[in-house]
Length: 236
Image 1 (cartoon, rainbow, N blue to C red):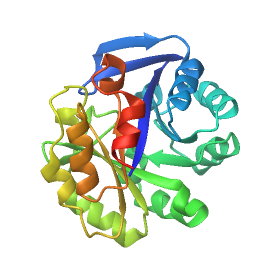
Image 2: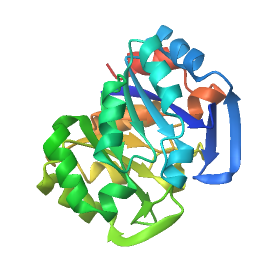
Image 3: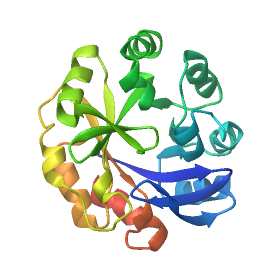
């Protein structure tokens, strides 16, 4: 299983939100590139990046910051937040990003999703953000009348190879993961990256044993509850 340390960007800073609430934001660094380099030095091979401003407003506000991370590290980077067009996807891939995460647009515009998959294939990841069992959009500020599990089944049928599944109720809460959510996908023909609530090495072991392809670690790294190098060793 692959560990994806997370860098959440907001106007050029490394931040964390509590359960997606932009009014509960903690700033951890003013230098995202240095943060990424530190993660690489601790053994990371992959990096999960979210442009929070983009997720909320639909703009690739922190594009240059993401490009600088790609150019100054050897990390395999995935980026999400505010990506609304094929041009946005191509722009990020040309900048050095390995995979692009589609969220709101993948849910509200299935034709666009099909076009993205046809054009970019395995470089497309769909973010499935679950709020009380429903799919959330627009930076988790709204939900749609679609069950999260049903939506994942639809994505399998559409040929999506990777999803990031986030239980919003656990994100940033340091209360541990909802393992039942991830266990539901075992055996499905899709690679699941677990996100939301990872706060211990035991959480990581459970995610690995549930058959997930990867796990994203955010707040637990910044608070010191989980040490990156040890986390990578544990799930090898």
